[in-house]
Amino acid sequence: MLGIIGGTTLLDYKGSELKKFEQDTPYGTSELFRGDGFFLLLRHQNRSAPHVIPFRSHIAALKLAGVDRIIALGSTGSLKENIPPGSRVIPDDLFCMSPFPTIRNHSIDHASLEFDPKMRASLKKISPDAISNGTYIQTCGPRLESRSEIMWMKQVADIVGMTIGSELAVSSEMGLPYAAICTVDNYAHGICNASVSYDFIISMIKENQKKALDLLNSIIKFLS
Image 1 (cartoon, rainbow, N blue to C red):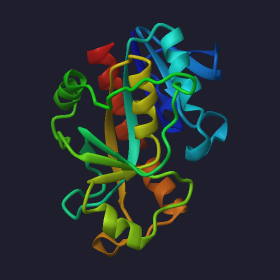
Image 2: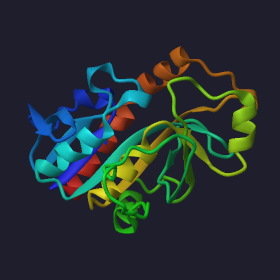
Image 3: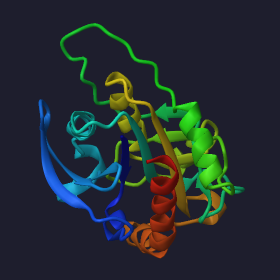
């Protein structure tokens, strides 16, 4: 069973009747939408800001519902001049600047963080124009990064966001293969002289909504 994680714009998906329900977990309760052969989870439910998203509850809810693999859609800023807004990136590596959520608070255990290569290959077939590799750097949020921070980040990563790393970490601990495809909504602060605000990012996400819904439809068609 495929689990799909995305932003609130995906709620406008019309390709399948979605049945909403709440899934209780040891870490809280998360809201899921069941479609034909998949579950959809909106990561910012209850208007949760990135730094307070209940990642453990979200991933546990998907697993308890029967999900055995996860595809995530993410919104990012570009750290490279040659990755313009409108691009898609399928990351193959991660750099994290914020604390990871974990389910290993009462035992010594380790999980390797790896974007699933088979699902990454499938995403490339679904979105052939996407950049097939790149490093995603996660910041804590909810604030945007400063220009000086971005100038450092561009040396170690290609795109920047606030959620994908945490989802990957918890998914890995729960034994769920995970891959992501990220839309570039803007250049990060200072890249190509960009000046970024929250209102601007929201406007770009809305502008790219139809493309995100088309991508969701393709993922459901080919992977569920």
